[in-house]
Image 1: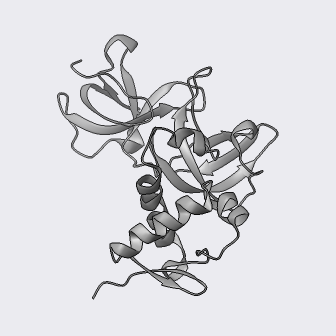
Image 2: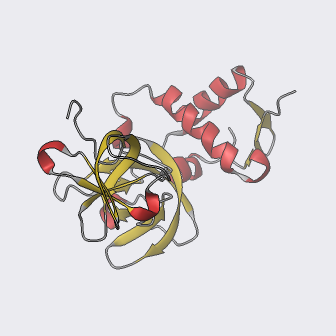
Length: 212
């Protein structure tokens, strides 16, 4: 193995052998990694290199998939909560196993059907891929405004008709509850997107700029 495996991110791995239930990929010191049959591209041969995402299955075993998750470790995203239990909330990130957000990492108690801005990371204690909606602590040391401007643009794109109900007159507590940033950072990010002609500022919100 010439590269270090990255849990929670995409990796380019070589096919070692093919079996009825899937193919095994080169995993180096940790052993071979299963890519289940349903994810194996048609025509795959021994020696091929496949672009796969590595995560832990229901039994906490390291497995691969060719599906593209909505977020990788080290990234921010807006995800929908699909269900909750006594341990926390589970969000749809595009894979069969939902992404877990423990109660201690929820800025507000997550509810099914609602979307939340999260940061995806690996828990130091359990080594599981989890997420947090308390994003401030993950933005320290970054260019907060530019980083949030990118997130805000993505948020607006995901809204119906590209319209965001938040604007520079919105209460600071509402902005923080939705985005986890101060009103100052929000306004600066809006200004940055406006200068780049990516959004229109309206009296009741923000609208994605329609390209000519």
